[in-house]
Length: 117
Image 1 (cartoon, helix red, strand yellow):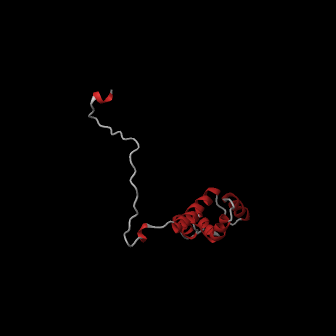
Image 2 (cartoon, one colour):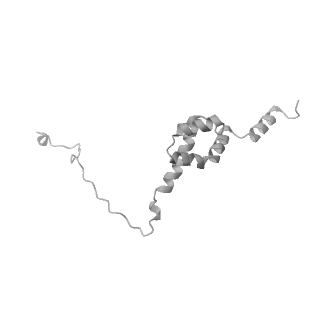
């Protein structure tokens, strides 16, 4: 058969074959802009996945597809649209009104029984 032992052959096969999750991520990233545009136009994640899955452009499960949408598209959008406080170079703080306690009861283990009645 082969001149290498089985351990070496298995290691060579593992090194040359990319993991399924990496391949799925590559397929997703190749179509990321199209997927993002379809989501912006109001298409559901299920309908996008069904089309891509039926065409063979994404062979992963719906759950995996949702994970990639969440981590690679939605997370990117929130980080782009959320302003950061570190950009505040002047050190200006907004005046935030302090909220009063709605219930002014302060529990204390030392109580006066006459106050209870």
